[in-house]
Figure (cartoon, rainbow, N blue to C red):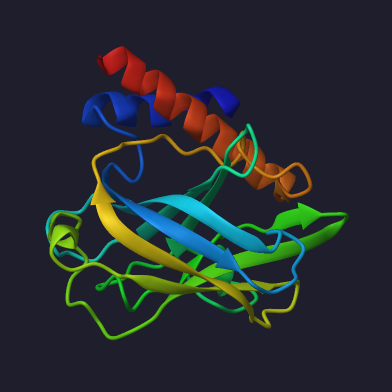
Length: 212
């Protein structure tokens, strides 16, 4: 099973000559402000690197599973958080949901973060009106600018803990890996999903190297 998963994502990345999933992306500089006490993100103001992407890489303005990758660097090792358009309920927050507009989707971590034996989900909720598209290319002209950051435990009672603001587009392209880059006190879970993600990321990286 491990070999099959890794080989699949490796082949997909090699064909695309890009990450196996979320191949279409645009980076932004940003800032995360954490104002509420919570188990995952310490309070503070953090410079942030953000990338918006389309999961399947559908063309133009077509709906897709939309993604937001967030990198903080409060320590020597960066912290990477990946969010996908998803539901808000107990079960639906596990499921990626295609969205037709960047400012309509709700972006969740899909799986929880395990902190001292407890599970915590993070979510980004765009502020403001629709921007009218789900395109990566059109983000240069019109993009989300501010998100509410929320957290919930086993019960999907979302509590606001801060906000994420996007500034100018960036030409920097990064590879995000929340399995390798996470706070020491907060581990992506559950174990089966963590292992699946690790295999997918490894396969995707190998496929991109083989394509070069």
